[in-house]
Image (cartoon, rainbow, N blue to C red):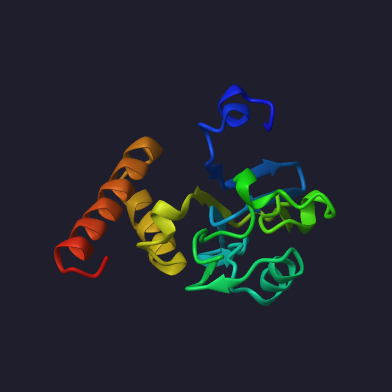
Length: 176
């Protein structure tokens, strides 16, 4: 990625979080990097599978400190709100440190989850969803929507409309 023209020229300085899932015959493998999150629902129970990489987590804060950074206002050096991501090369310049020892690490966490006959669904989403809806609210929202339709595209559109409505409400009330 460092060799992409926009990165080389300095025009592109941003990064990206990632969440993914690989479904095998016996195991579901979740992976996340940053604050994109995956959850699974099985037997009417929410199973939070991934954990966000936030700078204020003790393990992340230790790595950031060892790389010469600080955590203030719950952000790396007061700026970046995630501690693991692809890109964000301004935070990956320590030549004396390996890639996983930088202010921002590209190392994902992996979460294997045994498959069961009572598994219902998986949700993968970025912080734009998780910043305005809790794991439990999303789980209940999707379960309810599935009683109305099996059209997953429609459920996703309704979810995004709901999240955008919450953001507009928060902004209107002056809480953003």
